[in-house]
Image 1 (cartoon, rainbow, N blue to C red):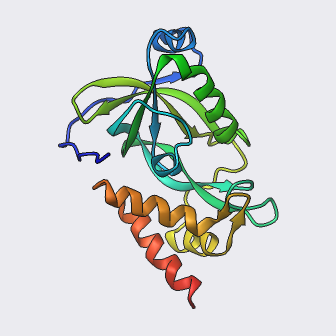
Image 2: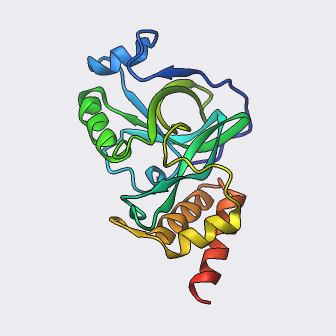
Length: 210
């Protein structure tokens, strides 16, 4: 399925903690009344691992995608951590990714899968955010963002430092560089090129063949 790139549009981000009483959509998801939306910006873009009924380009405001989380399980180890992408809160920030719609009947099992995958070290926070879809709608989606207070947060690393780490790290799901190259390539295929990821991908290839 081909995903068309949307025109530029504006929408404000809304932060609602997971399970908050202020989130009617969250309560409906739990009872299987409405579809569940999930916003992917990293490996979920190319390897969601769950069944979805629809997907489209989406944009989240108020956050920036970056390699700001040390990976000690999937793409690195405790002794030699790798780096994975996370959403870091940033004034004026913006991140384009893919929004997946999940049928109400499988919303609960999808959330269980995502929590087992994304909350393995508690460095991510499960939140509900308002995302803008390519078709003009705004929906509340599950979005995993970085917990700046967690020990795995490493915002502020230079791109060169990131490249050096990614080039050498290996974790339970394989080389860190595979994660980078796959994400950069799939974002580019969707028309969502990320300049930082493209630079990192090129630089890591050089380092690996040095």
